[in-house]
Length: 291
Image (cartoon, rainbow, N blue to C red; front, top):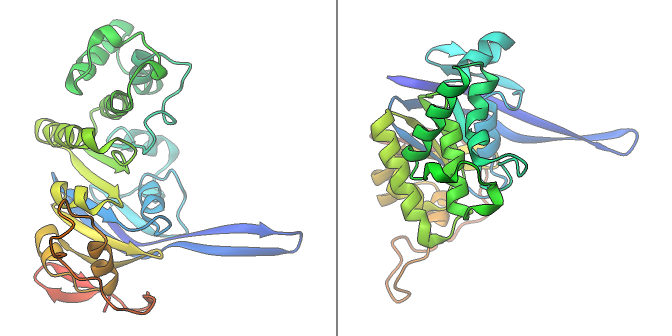
């Protein structure tokens, strides 16, 4: 059963160029996909491909130009402000920068407690107990509640971000490059934490990333974006084993290997600049490509 369904999502940005000229940039162009309950869905592509804009439109952090996002069958774009406030308890996001997304003037405990305060949930003591519980859940010690963000390591700051996102007991979490700013040596720790949290709390993830190594290990299904459109989409293992679109093959050919003498899984393709006019069509079981 799909917990989130995106239908023909479009997002244009208009920029002013002088007094009498303006330009329109199409960031997301007719994007559709769905995410099943308990699944991790990967949205991958280079910087500027539209994946982050897609994620932010899904939570209505950005207003879309057109399209629909259905959360448990309800269109969030037509929801009132009061209804959207309720829906957002169940839909949260963790941002890329584990330092920039935390208020440096607030203590860690206050940061995690803030969503509970905003939504008026629980008494002061109940909220504090919840914060202690969340710290333990993400692998932090309650003795660190009074520290400021600069007193934590980058991976600890990202754990604080996870705790804040989980404070309202969401069922759907968008991870927007949530591990890309971390050192490679600790990325595996965070990925394991995300898996544990998903199992324990029955979470559904949208995992936005450009690092295909991470995507392969954590995602059940993947959509590859290029210039605002989805070029290829399918289950992770078949898509990695048999990429159809030249852009997907190009991304996979660029993934570094531990052994530089080992043959690439997919040779670098010879292709002219990829167009994005073709529509997705079936190319295998649960596998689509714009070819």
